[in-house]
Image (tube, rainbow, N blue to C red; front, side):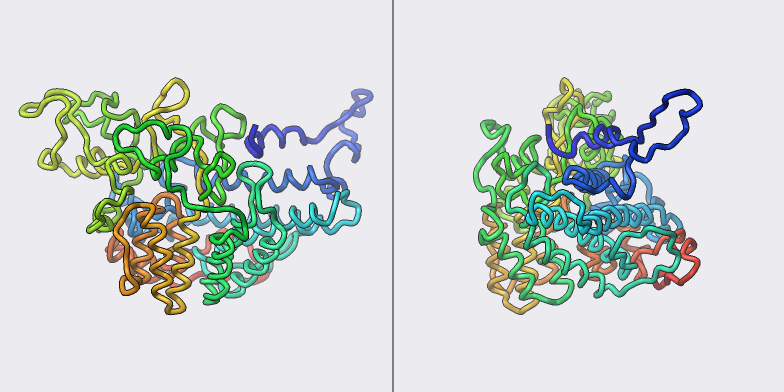
Length: 542
């Protein structure tokens, strides 16, 4: 059974124990019977439980709720996707961002949960009474905690700007936090990642564990934020050139369904089939994945299935106008169209795309078929654009469905929605695009083009020249390669382009309602109100 997938069961085994010799002693405390600050961190297993808690938060990032509560980080309301059900919904109407600060507040809280767990590990590892087998074992545990702390600060900074730096465990009430600068937060994250890069293992002991390549991948991004382009190139190069392990883009069919050759199935399609996401299964471009498991306690938090297919696919199976009766005929997915790609994602970025396999019908389903005779059309005919006359037709029922979000073969006896796979957090193609961005920052456009072309060559897309390389082009390529994987809100926030790109490419209500203040999100008001002994300043415009 994979590591972390029974986190609930593990935690349950550590509940406080009570002993009673008689009824009148039932409530007497016996300190040796339960965990305290003195006995909670004395061996590797106890430290790894805290590490597992950080990974548990990663599961929550991708699957804690239905609808837009989590998927907003994937770019909801920006250039790549929007909520198609209601124009007054948050992120279609950016004026609501301040009013509904619960979204960003949840994000804020999750990062500091990770930071708190990380600090507990880092600080308690210094205890001389801990029974470490070696300094290497200790440093690897601390390195994983420091990686997560850096990861959390990166998540915070790219949404809120500078935030309070909490560098050690908090053991008593503290009400005087102050915001550090964005640069200070990034520098702190860089120091953590440099330590992690030196002490994390090259190969994972269990699927989902953080490895050295993940630290260098993230370090490359942080260095770009600090305008340290040489450092970014060096960190990405350690991943790409083999110092951190044998990482290569997958260029041939692989994995659980590699022998299926119908409908033009290809290597990009393979990347998103169930069971294909982890390095230990032969996927050499997988750097870090968050783990999910079907029918296992803790395997899918809160739900019996992951929600990505339901959220990201159209509800064509309810398109009664085209002969559907609530049963999917030409595919077995049961999307509910909570998140729809923008025209930018579905069409603009694919202009002049040649034979790019990422745009093939097997990877972006563009053809839907009548489920019954609807004169003058017959069952099995392609539904033409001319048939889609109502707003709901193209916003909810019929729009391109990206195959990376679903499947035609489900678990649990084929029940629609049971598409449970591990989620990529870092993939090698993004490492190439980060290095290309760093080369662009240095003005070395040919080297940037070379890295972009590594990604495009695997996709069988036309190659580009140095003159084609711009930041906008890299963002376009990230959308082609990483849509629904990268946290687009973080990418645009890091670059200060959330407003500009949304105004240029976003769904019209979002493009019209977003304003300059939205390049940062509001600090949650609860955070400000509780900090009674110092001032946490709100971001401009809120």
